[in-house]
Image (cartoon, rainbow, N blue to C red):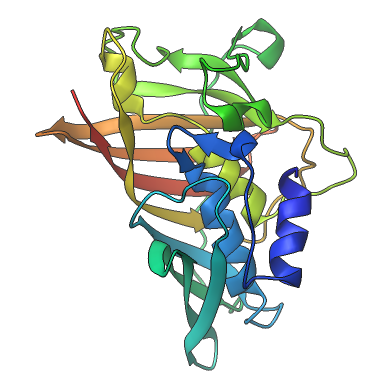
Length: 265
């Protein structure tokens, strides 16, 4: 199933959803998809005018592809403007993904600060592609297209603290608008930036992830490119701390991300 089909399926039957191996990321299911599926169930518990502001995500354990997963959510508190929601994905009786989310209505404020501008890089057509290659690149990349524009590719021995470029969904109807679930997949599609420092392959994965959505979201369709930039803020002892942003192609900030990642090298 493609991304849209999975989002629809989890809302119809959250108690049992089997995700195919085409969404695999090594031995686990792609984390961006897992987060998006949990988020979709959380979103259904909150009124539409309470927009998602931030999600704190923990990847507790690998979610094995091809094995049924249940998705559930509960509202911890619903105040006058903000709802706090807890969501989880459970496989074989164990939590594999856990999310605490904050949803809030807009409110009047005298504070207004423009977002920092997007970096200027080469156009997607002039940037280095990252093709899907069966049994070489992660399986989920058959659904997402990336073009490198900042830093180096994984295991290239590039000393830059930055990584990034362009990203979009492959083979999706251009009439489909990006929402927060799509943004979770687009941001997490990129490998941990610390992997570009290595000169030979080694495992690495996200441990915890916080993402904040800039509301209201700019109007972007799923076939349009978005621009991603990550910066390694610190790394040692097998852990890295990475800050990132995602912009629309016309420079509107869509999301702010921070991850703690593990690297086994």
